[in-house]
Length: 246
Image 1: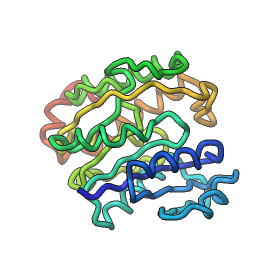
Image 2 (image 1 turned 60 degrees about the vertical axis):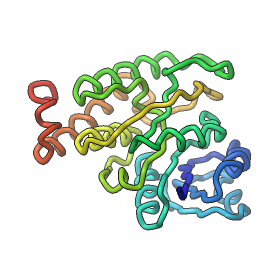
Image 3 (image 1 turned 180 degrees about the vertical axis):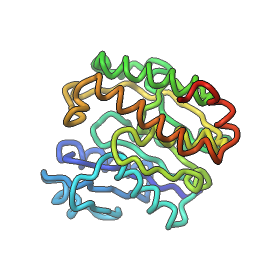
Image 4 (image 1 turned 90 degrees about the vertical axis):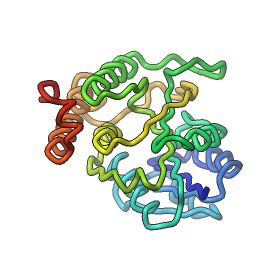
């Protein structure tokens, strides 16, 4: 099984080198998407060996970085893609756990709420916890899923799953669009527990999304738009969403 680990980064000079050092213990093939960083991220990446760097000249958004990752993976011969963040929240040592779990799944997603871990740090910021719970519950109700964490970016995808996904949302809500598409295509989804690690609880989303209300509304809009796009050519999704996805 040929594995690719992909890391989208934006202004991650603080964690980048240490994260890459750890990832190299578990993966030989790494791609980093530098999403228009304005700090020393590009300089640090220029000094790194044995990895592929894809660069956006301007910051295009978290979803845009993942879209670039998906496209790159599909244009290569990797069997499994693992995506992870570079802010210290995701432990590279968990990469083998995700890869092991994908033997009977198409997508394996980390969940920070599936179980507790001793190494968990600060408590989850309250607004993030509440919005995660609301959106996860609404996704489950609309799509017939059994997720416990709709937002964790630590995931493993089979190549065949990437073929079925066609995300277009460039912002933070892109994973929600992907869940709708995964449900439409009947992909096998599994969650594995990962620690809740928040090294910087003040880390911002940017702009109006720093406020909980607009952020929740944005996430709901992404889901609604994704459902509207999929339901007309996806019978199973249309049946599940009848009367509940308007």
